[in-house]
Length: 476
Image (cartoon, rainbow, N blue to C red):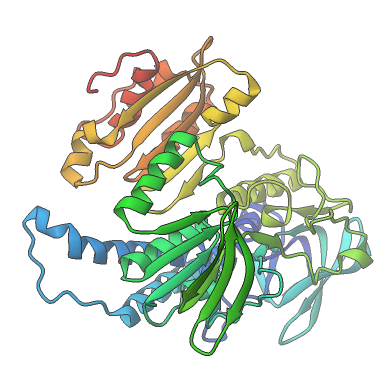
């Protein structure tokens, strides 16, 4: 195998492996370096997303939702279930199978596109423009040469100060996905995306879940109307206990459980006793081990790699994408940057529009949005109009038995151009794509209102909300 390449990608997560495939498609000799190992000790491409993030969490979310439906919803459909039992071992094995299928899929795509793979930790070992040396520290230490290097090393969970993850009692995202038995009492610090998704999984499987959130607002990044509806559903209907404005004073892990001492603004001190504790307070960029200082690679004060608008770093021919650079820590954002950088290296014009990157929380109901929230537009002084349509009035949602939530359109008051779309409800993760396409093409709410949507379908809620911007909803 040649050890000189046009492009070497350090990191095999969503951004890295997609960047490598696109570079190879464009005729560039490409290699990818990644050090992830699966539970069996073998290389496992796909990074955090595939191995302990997006993919396994969605597998467990689906399994736990199926279990919950069998226990609580099937009877409404005339389906009687007797002797319902949970086989958590089998559920976890299914999750692991889904992960392996995705790992194997990436290996196949590398072979198909002739991407060379080196298993080990990659770092900048010297050289310069057009001839960077990338060291691969693994079972066989190697050095490869690259005209261009794309750094896509992702991120790691942020621990609480002084509280290390042991993934037995104090869990990060990987530990939260691998709990061997349903805990009686589960504590979660952080009520963001990961906290809500993991809390939902274990609540549906029978755990008593208490979430401690430092912020005093619930889901502040989401539209206020969506956050308000989500709060009602998660706390009142699903039994998640969520404490806002929680200031964590001390976490003590004993032999069989964890004690969290905390206080709330203007209130007394409290103590949470739990069998296991998930800590989901954000993530930090994986830039340690890149040999950044010696190579002259500039990092900012938080450890992110400094890049320009096109993902160029301070070093010629060295690029960086995904969680190690500015912007949202989202797998699909990393993928788009990976494709764009590969195309720029090949002399094309890669494109990423940060204004139309969708956000999704895979709870039940799902939450998804793209563009500006109503509160953002208010603070910016932008005049806007709103159209909102409840799934309660949607025929397909009634047939599914899931009428929670709504679709909300926010459009410019003068031009009717869509400024944001916010959804809480069934299959929100799929419905949001229509909004992303519309905004990419500069569509107005009227454009969506004039499109024929299949009946009955959940997508009709998109049309009705768009109609609602002009006060023309037909079914509400």
